[in-house]
Length: 406
Image (cartoon, rainbow, N blue to C red; front, side, top):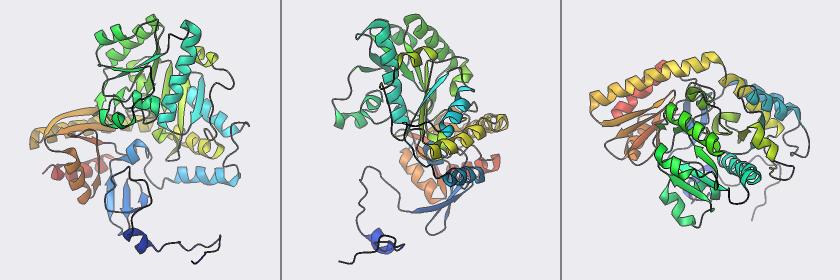
């Protein structure tokens, strides 16, 4: 056996041989037969240098597209300090600056940083239960989620996720979590003041078919949760940070939740999640109640600060609202023209179309034609362009999509 020196730059296995043998990566993803090697703007390129217009944004992560000069500069500047990681045993300025940037844009004064959206939701459940225990004792611990919601794949977040085929192999899931219909009369029965700690809602259900929750529904729910002393958690992991044309999706409804969870675009592709908390819930948490080794590290927080400032730019948000409305109108016109789309739903740069064939087939044909799109259910195609995509970019993608409908 040949042993390579530790500092060798040579690959252990030649690329051609690596491609030919079975992958050691755990087979939990069905990946298409191409290797992505670089990105620029709103395009990705494979190993054959073929370009793909990206309407997935890395599942909502790459809001600023690829090879963004500002993100790259923020990374280099952070690396130059030599502080990639210190743990949360020590104070570092980047986390504080990022926290200030977030709370200055929301009427929620505290932030907890973590590493992903699922972790953010798990943290929010813990924070709500800690607060509720002080309020009503151990009996007040139930978490209520809505039909169609997707909140992650950890045990509590999976229990709140309405995907039977995701849940079934891992039962029993975390207890004390219930999924109910998206109806106010159902919630009025479900949100028992004595037993329910929190209800979690996506203002736009992304994985659930891109279903925009009506602002009036959110206002009524906010009133109900305040009356019953139930924490309202808004999961903005996919729909927050500019995706709807508002920095926070809840701004559209004119409400203030008790907790908001963020992730996906927060750190420009680096792993980061966050939970924003009301003063009342934050005051219930004590040192040792929760923690994370990596969350809010100086490198990731420095990059996230740059991303947050960019995504909060009023001009960018106006662009997403205006061109997003144009995108929705064009999709509606495509539905009328082709008679191959049953329904169009969405807001900003987040749209879903119900198609009359398996959505996976449309995704495959679009990819073969140079457009990357997503599914959101068996018959729903999801469109998540980078927020920097221009109207010309959108028009180019729509032309490919129409061809992919067959």
